[in-house]
Amino acid sequence: MALDYGRRRIGVAVTDPTRTIATPRGVIERPKRGAPASALPRTLTALVAEIGPAAILIGIPFAMDGTAGTMAEEVRAFARALEEATGVRTIEWDERLSTARAEREILAMDLPQAKRRQKGRTDEMAAALMLSAYLRGVAAGDAVGERP
Image 1 (spheres, helix red, strand yellow):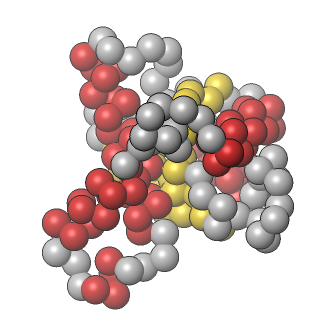
Image 2 (cartoon, helix red, strand yellow; image 1 turned 90 degrees about the vertical axis):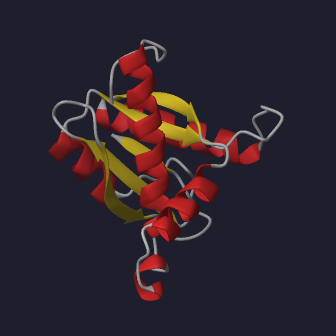
């Protein structure tokens, strides 16, 4: 399972039983603005319980120079809270440029404009792209740890 954390929405992606295909699974709305990262949506913890992933890949928005800024620390706090609430290990993933890649993928799908602009479409696609890259790394022996 992979999550693209955002202050408004969390993009979700899952993998198939063979752990070869990453599929967008939708978005989960975050609590009201200003809520701490540790305020987990109930729908997220319920989804984790339903899916039962071995691990959860969480995109960390590092700066282009590789440093972790304020948003990266917020996402890390969210990951810790999620791990504590669900008991499922979280894995950090460098998500630099994932939104730009997701937007390009969505454009390439040649969807009608209304579908392309659907709230959360970019978030769930970014999560799927991260998960797909992680799964390729695991298959190639480059990624460390359990498969999400």
